[in-house]
Image (cartoon, rainbow, N blue to C red):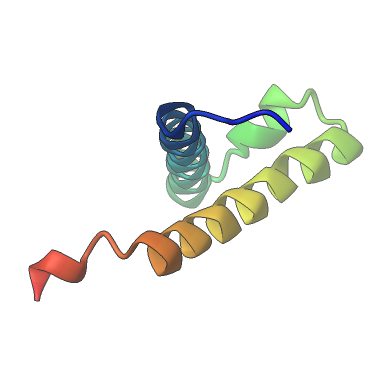
Length: 81
């Protein structure tokens, strides 16, 4: 059995969290453009393909679930109280 260094584990968690945050920020910006201008920017980037559109939308759900897990497991706001 191989030992995984603790540093690699923490760096991977940080990278995954940053990726999920950036995905959710991008989806928020796409939603804002759609709300303000009635132009679906995400559908435009998916070239009108509904299968790709739904697959990309599922990334928002995965990103939200990861961040929920991260908030519960690591409690970054614990020191704020």
